[in-house]
Image (cartoon, rainbow, N blue to C red; front, side, top):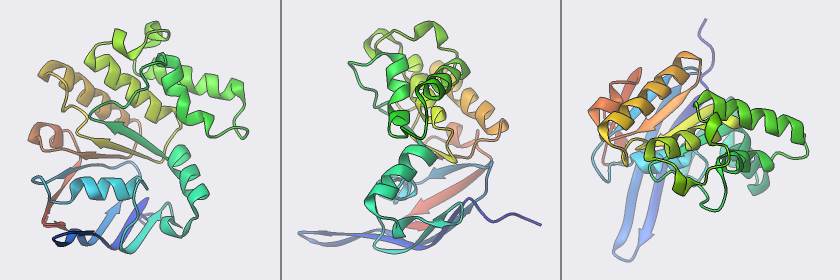
Length: 227
């Protein structure tokens, strides 16, 4: 018997009121993602894929519809519980890395875990950080600042930061967009390894090569899933 989906979206819609009228960024999207799946979300610019990713990551709220994450109704939570959910259950990897320039590798990976104190001890946080950094093979770069790293190393720090919280779901937005081809392939290989280890991945991309590394593909157009 198949388990309930990790992510269950029901008629999720998002509209924005602009001066020239209402923009329907997402139109009644239904989507199920099961634990351990890797999914690529593809579509032209303006198709709604980034809006969908922001809603999955609880960075925005829908106009209408429901989002169940691991059986929990996400958008019924208050701001404090929503922030806690984001910092403990959802790992983010962005195209622009989003590291803090003044912090070294260890400190950047540590940041999301600091929101989980006092439920996590300092010792537990340190163990998680070191384990995540070792997983992306950057244990010899602990004290380096982002400016001292290559593009591929910087993205691996971002992946370690996502892994450190031991998330239910990893969301990646064009994770190879700022990398050269060889470095991008290495990052995709790392994502593939994480998936084989049981991670649930959702990757927004315009690149078919990236999508081919995923188990399945969702195509979007005009705010709808078309295939």
